[in-house]
Amino acid sequence: MNKRFIFHVWMAMLTAALFLLSFGCARERPSENPPIHLNPDMDIQPRYNPQSTSEFFDDGAASRVPPAGTVARGFLRDDDSYFRGIDENGEHVDEAPVYVTLKLLKRGRERYDIFCSPCHGRVGDGKGIMVDRGYVPPPTFHSDRVREFPDGYIFEVITNGVRNMPSYGHQIPPDDRWAILEYFRALQRSQSAGADDVPVELRDKLKQ
Image 1: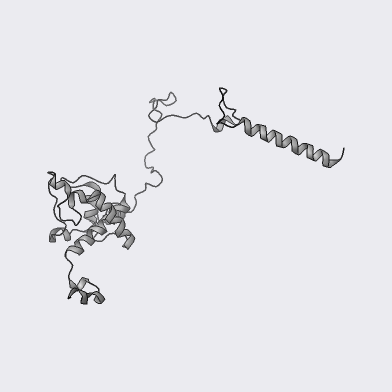
Image 2: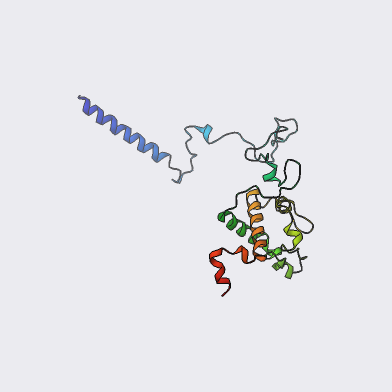
């Protein structure tokens, strides 16, 4: 019996074995028999469901309290100026700690229109649709008093709310809060802009 013949016999046997194995493991095939688990540890593992009980721990709860001083990955808030809008002295930062781009302003406008415009209006005049339905009118963004607010204070108001305004800290992440703040400043600029704010090459068109 030559080696080539033996090789072809082994290949045929291997192909048949692989075919039967793949055919037998097809889960979509209707069967009342339980599936075959070649390595059951990967499919069946001991675990606890959320808020379930446990006889292992003294308090009977499966969910454990994180050790003191630990922070979940991705939740470290060590930059107060960015995550709280305050400086090392606990004062509100005058300017937002973000780089202003057109992309950021577009994002801010999108988030502002969703979360803020129902009360504050699309241009920040405090005449949103909720006011027409009996909600207490918010102050306009375009008063001298509001224009002088530091950026960090506006960020804090978005985060924690103030008076009749609710907190949006759980709905709007810090990135979007700063984007809204920058669009808020753009709205203020747009409603009090003068001829000097128009690019030089476009000013002649204003006189026409």
